[in-house]
Image 1: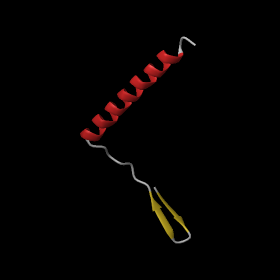
Image 2: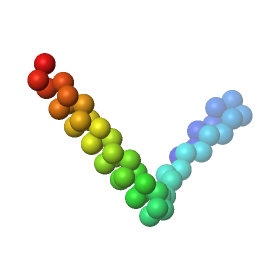
Image 3: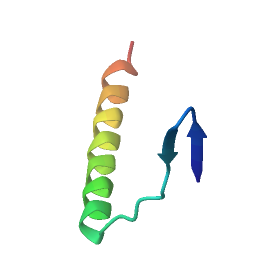
Image 4: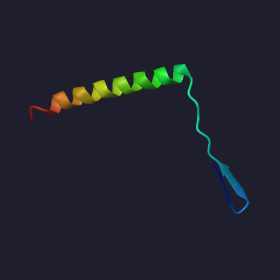
Length: 46
């Protein structure tokens, strides 16, 4: 998709991810979910 605004062209392309990047994102999401669960377990009794 290309937008032309006052002699300025902006091109947007979908970025393909490598297998390593996908694995890193999955690992980061897993850690994030674990931290969320830990926070919920700490605040649940109150």
